[in-house]
Image (spheres, rainbow, N blue to C red):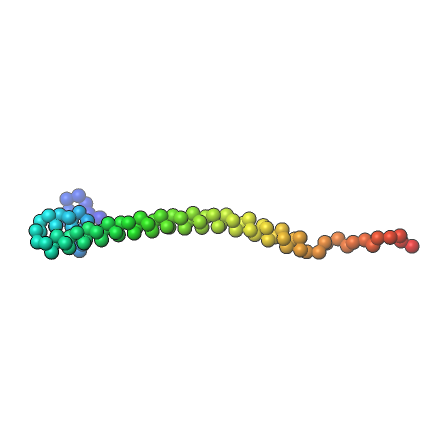
Length: 100
């Protein structure tokens, strides 16, 4: 939902961002809260790394797909040429020798 400037958000957020987790760790001073915020930040870092890896993989896959699509036409033309070579000649061959 897009809100105009100055309007309030109707619903509270359900999750923290990476920066929100760090800010919560600064406010909460218990060792358990600090450990949990470090765990959350590491999860965000790992998630970011996974997303980047999948983007690279998707880009490589689309590049490979483009190459294969361009090769399909070349492979088809090769098969057509081979099939033409396999067909018997269309003209009748003449018998060699003298006609009487």
